[in-house]
Image 1: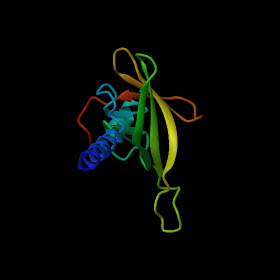
Image 2 (image 1 turned 180 degrees about the vertical axis):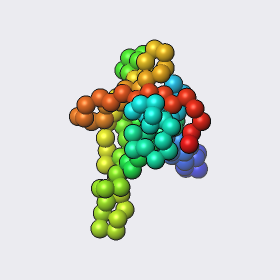
Image 3 (image 1 turned 30 degrees about the horizontal axis):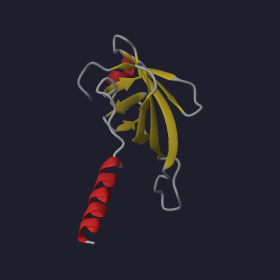
Image 4 (image 1 turned 120 degrees about the horizontal axis):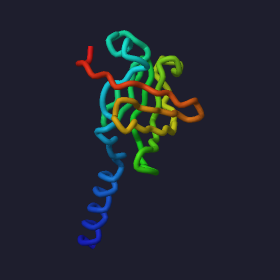
Length: 131
């Protein structure tokens, strides 16, 4: 009986560890913007900050909950998406599940992102320090 409980506890621990979605490739990580001018403007709503497990735009973003690479150049991600304009009665952002596709150009200077059914958007990599 004690051995069985130990096995169940170990399985529960492994399941909890497996709940982590993983991380985005370092190729995606960084500050991106619609153009180089937006890279220089800390208040620009055309900037995208990508970390290993999150996408953050001006007033919206998403936490990565799943990652699947379908080809060497395209990565499919699942997101817990939030938007400051989509809130409940207490002004707390409502979390919605969204799917996205990401790819980076061969020279790593451009990121293309398609979220759900929206048209793909392309961003340039910001090469200066973050503002």
